[in-house]
Image (cartoon, rainbow, N blue to C red; front, side, top):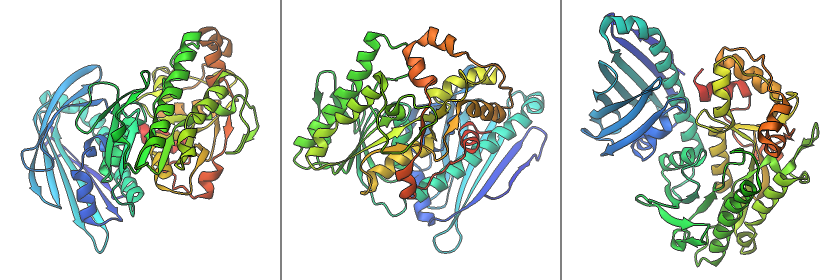
Length: 464
């Protein structure tokens, strides 16, 4: 990574710049930026940004309308591309929005064979004149520094992940969920075509399906290079009443079974189905190390996961390679376990859950989507495997590390009795269970983790 500098030519102007050398050809780096999903992929997960409207691609006059939040306040931000030099440079300029002025220069310069120097330079003037600049400059500089670091780190890692893998067509279910909404732009910026299976309001390129009714546009699967199944209701979405349990079962078994049976009947079958699973397969196992071949645990959650994985058997019986990545906690501030923890920890009232001694498998959101891609594109990967970082942590360590990253204490434990009172069996099976999972297969296949240490993963996804 190159050095960062922040210069003010006048009191109320801020310039933040970052330069990074990437081991990929400049044409490849430029093409990545021209593809659908580039903006989404480069937007840090801690930023609350939503695209309202977009016209054009990477050419002069192309326009994007965003909704951004400054604290609790939503604001409309309109920006246009200008000064486009094909293959080398483009500039984003604010037309209207939260700043008195905003300009973001993007430069890509070849540096020998197969190497590109990327440079981002943001020049902005905060609102409210000199008073606004005096109040906001230090905080804004730090925020922009973190954003540019995130962009360059993500771009370099994504380009490396896609290197040597030609364009393919992916079909993705659950594409609007926590993981799917990160996976789709990762795939499209890599030059792949993505068909999303959606229940309602299909957009361009989407296809309809309804697992509850057993209906699907089967033509979407014909000739696809890979199907990635992420459909299923949130396991930790509430107390496991009888109705909730049935929803968890139906949302997984019906969707996976419908995909598997449709793939099995296809004339031109996709060669691989990657169907997400969970480390809940193992149940509460205390201190026992759990490799990919460990036996299932007892109780509702392990039984659910076994049935979920088994629902894909029709595809496997038809000769399709089926892979089941068993995920633990997926670290992203956009939702999931980390999303729920942020509010109390930022308020300084976070702490370990229960005894804090329970083991937890985890992966960053970037490694999570890279693991799905790895399973889809690596013919050796089949069957169930632990899709987690190589170093599981105890809950107390997660609490201490998150608190340190946020600069807050972690002194207030959440008693197990309170969780059980609030959430019953769900709390016992997810929040209080100890699952010391080890990713043996991924280490054997030398999966290129981006984040093997919890603190580095948290700092990346939180921009700290």
